Image (cartoon, rainbow, N blue to C red; front, side, top):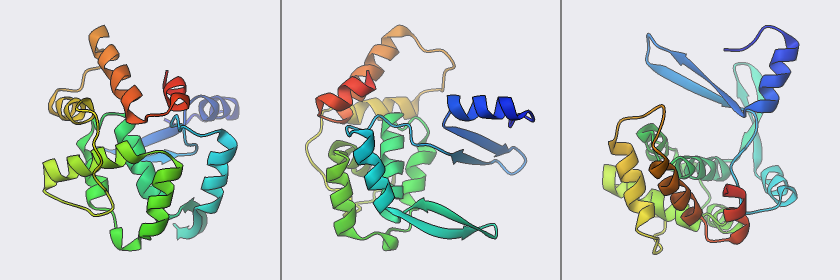
Length: 190
């Protein structure tokens, strides 16, 4: 919950990157993110430049808000879901229901290359096909390690645990290392 005291609000904003608000009666949840915390295989300056070049203004609730351009928004959803092993199938549903008609394919493929997210995009394409029989052309298929397919399938299928055995942590770390093939990403993920 959002703290009332300004000092606690600042601590919260500095320590986490999002809050989730849930309406239990309607079974609806919205996450509000105020920073991007994924371990991208890029220097912060380069990533900030990419974000700066891929923003747009929208009106939301009567206010003008800066958001990611559709291509970066979709790619962020892919990277976020991949990072968590698609533990919440809802993250994949968000991509399935994404307004793909808003995507410029050339911009999309350029961002995928810049963010070195080819494996994550291919994994997402595999999962979209596996669960929804969707072959979205934006999710080009490249060969990916078998664990990038088996790990999310197992994670989605099992019960969500508050505490996981150490063996799961090792498998999770191995999985995260395989998401991107660059040394800088592996060091950030570690």
